[in-house]
Length: 248
Image: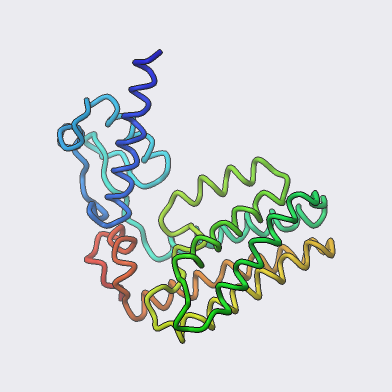
């Protein structure tokens, strides 16, 4: 039993490190991952590395090479856009289910706390805007929204989808613009959060679904900006396309 636990631990550690290297652009799109090299680098046997590579292939970050082994998957613009749209569909369905099925009072208390914390964050003076806190709260809100659905299937599918670098609710949230430019966008996103919640409370399933889908489109608009202008903060994600990280 101890050996099994140790093997699982090594596999998860290897998967975590490899995932980080892929998402940071250390391994760009098209790069071949060598099992023996990774095992030596991480100081583990090849067995957990092999299991970790298979896990990342299931997540969609790697592909099995024609001659064996694994290659970092290349992504195109449409892959990014389609995955964001799919997140919108899943979150929209979660919002509709929540509105139609009703939400227990205990879950509302968590959502109300997150909304209040987000309000305080986005309404802070520009020079006091805490971007890291906003991203953390934004992610927590989207997780809570999924749970409001009462559907374990939707929660699990969203968790699986968000393992991809461009599917997280904060994947293409603007981060490195001047605070005066960031705050307006964050406040608009927070207004959409409140609109989704209001529709769920009013038991308006179709409206809640439509608002959640539209909310996901913020990420697509930011993605379009990145491709049009280029952005250093997205270098890791864009490296998955097999380029240098410069959009265009």
